[in-house]
Length: 434
Image (spheres, rainbow, N blue to C red):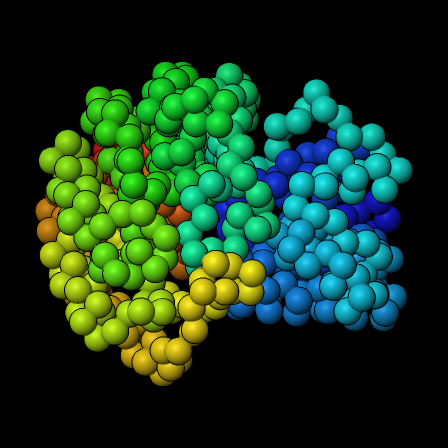
């Protein structure tokens, strides 16, 4: 156990990671040594930043809390503090169920965490962070909460209404991060196309992205997560005109059947969804579209699932993830619908949909063989340098593998790479030049 050392463990999404990075910076400003997601935690205090979005994430968070409580009982640390989405959602229940935890905090209680440690929260450093990703890229959170109220989603219960940061505040953070060596920004929000409505009275995501693109030193900007209804068309113009805005959009469509979309409270129809995909590809030639689809939502019969499969074959998404519906307590769908599709049916549909996507992904990647693409190097792993193109977001998308034997490459640097081969997901290449 190291005195004056705190271990922070982050579970869940990249939005949680940004929160942890801000908290780490505040702790370091107050004299603590902080490790993040250490394989061998040795601090006297552990802070677990939890996820409470779906059942599997909640289970992972509970298991992590219990693991550190056991370490405390064995004398391997002094305090266990828990924050984040799970404790925001179940604050009272968790305190009763796991009394070994010294204190539970909500998702946004960073200031209280600092003051309970006997330190002062330094507001003048509000958006400073200690980057825990590779130093050349960072996640940029532009808002909290969501006003969409999709029937299946617990996010509004946890984070509340949509709350945008100002453009000036975000640009200042970008400038700060560029000065720290960040070149690539993953712009994240629960629903980024709604950005600005609450403070400017209209969608301002296009203006924001354009302002970020104009900051000297910003090499790549990638956008997560869009919503299909009332999609801001001007964002596509910015993507087309600004070379450092990646031709990439992450838009969670969830389904295509008008019946299922209505049950989900998505406020969009099948025809509109088809038209949106066509418009994106027309306005931004070469755009790569990432989406997430859901199977097994109440009301999805065989006919509706067939619609989803047909849509997937037609759209040929460059990147796609899918998951089976899991009822979340307190959500509109839990109150309104019976979760009556058997789990084995959900899993069979999920497998069938992902099999379709696997063959599509293989086709998408094979078309790139022979081309020369700009690649950033993230790391070295075994016999390969691992990099990404502008069409690949960290952690979730395919990668480019370049033999280590070829030449010495630097992490965080960009190279022109000729693609020599592909498999179902990844690409292989050789460096042509910087």
